[in-house]
Length: 464
Image (cartoon, rainbow, N blue to C red; front, side, top):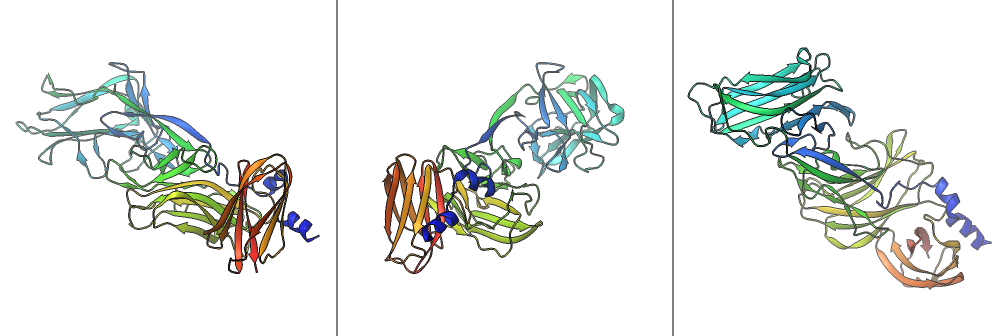
């Protein structure tokens, strides 16, 4: 009778368990979606920041392409399409340009809404001092369905020669963030510079003919730091084939972008727009434990280190936070088991992971499994599994009825997730009896992990 009760309480058939006890969707990071991102060569633009609001347009004045910028509602806020050939954070950079420039010209089309205004910036410097140019605005009163030429004076003093040119544009007034409207757009082509009636040498990619194309893989059902920058190498979030379950795992990298900003590799099953993150997996009971596989490269400490979090919420309020922080290199996959102890039943589980903010840190994660008080966690090729006695003193027995022959690995872990024993067994079709000697283990609570090609189980047991 005790064996039957244990079977009913600890194990069950997959079809019953999975409907009642949800897992984090794409918990083994097998499913990814590829997206082609285009961005302008010789410029920094909104395509580099994963905003789909810069477009390579076939509608051109000269050559094959022009550039179209659009303001779009993204991640809960309005974002303007833009391009610049300098560092907008520090207002440095640009391209070498040793000329006296009277005016900067080009062609545009625009559809600007209400009080919104598109921006075009041209700044000329000499030895770091501004000697000409300014910020020019296109308002709704200058909307144009057809290509229209513009020519702006630089107000550069006579006889002065520049050594640097900075240009850029945005589809809305993103500097003041006043009057921005979803759907405003502006299109540019064939930028030129003049001194009097003389056409000056062209700047790089002046007619927006040259574009870079990059395919980015996004993990399905997760939000990530790929929102923040996709112009780094490596990316802050990568699909890797070094996996423990299936073909892929996720790798989080701490990287530095072109503006020397540190980008922390981050991933969540919630929404990453604000801190703390929101959203997550709907729950209706308290799990026994959560496990995952990981590797770490710890390059150094800054403000925080590589970290895995499982945050439980009830009615939007945090009621439990479980996880691990890693401060040592782990070059071979380790299996982590986190016991879950909660007083109240949560309605949401949020998974977050970070690579830490020291450049060079990385964290690989695979095979996140939530274990519940009842049921087989994954689609194991088992008809029945019984563990006895309860609790156990010197020996723990597993009686397993298998549908077909299969090799399995059984591991024991202490309450802190350290592996204390493991062995591999070849199961035969039908009934199998496995005896595990636990006499040398100290008394306490342990986990055993049963892992096969068809699935995995982590369950608690007590050693007397």
